[in-house]
Length: 324
Image 1 (tube, rainbow, N blue to C red):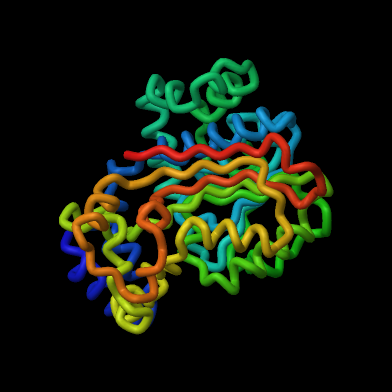
Image 2 (tube, one colour; image 1 turned 90 degrees about the horizontal axis):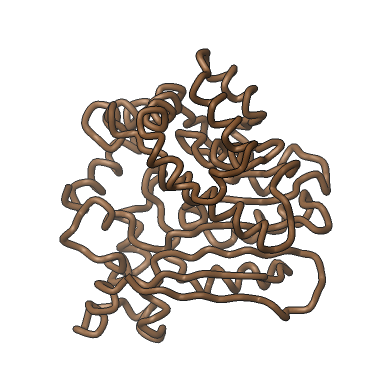
């Protein structure tokens, strides 16, 4: 769908009473949430990567208590972490978006595509606990509450990630997948401060951020940097609503937020978007707000970070950057 048309529809719906219910119904009828389109593999791969990075940092996933920021409409990331050995996942969201129908459609997809699921998890899928839990997931017959109980997932809707109803130092890993880009920078700073409060002294931060223009996910006529041509005011007219808010922070600005929060990064990975780099070389019309930033920093379309608030030497920190 043309991004401008989609933005106009989202803006109009966001202004209506019962906007959440209306938007969900439209997505289920004619949008990306249509029946048969649920595919959890991206979240599974993110969960596998988190588990791998935790193990490579010298920790075991088994027995860890995770906190996920931004549940959304599904529990695919908590499911992936549970399959990898998590003891519990607490998942929080400001909005009560979680849909039982989508959860079970995702699980049915996994059941029908077991070989793809196993490939998504790679070496994690060889672990006995993973195999045991995957069988439990596939065999489960019950309601959403029963499934969450099986996986020891605690869902907290209408919960502010910057002011959590959790005791201090009770979380092992603070995680998110494609959530931070939808949160204003000042709120992210408060969320990271709260993460420091709830994490154990050796707790980990593990976040996957998608700094791309999300309209480009559905409109091939634009690149992942399309939104960088607009002023703040003009962009707010297009995407300043609850369904498609983008903070437009670049990867280095997220890294600065982690640094200012007192986090010590142990590892990070960035993926550059080649079409965006090409557009920038060809004179893409950036707004003045972004003209001073190097093209390689503007064109990052994926950022993954592993960090901690515990003190220590920066030796061994890793960074990778790929282009696609």
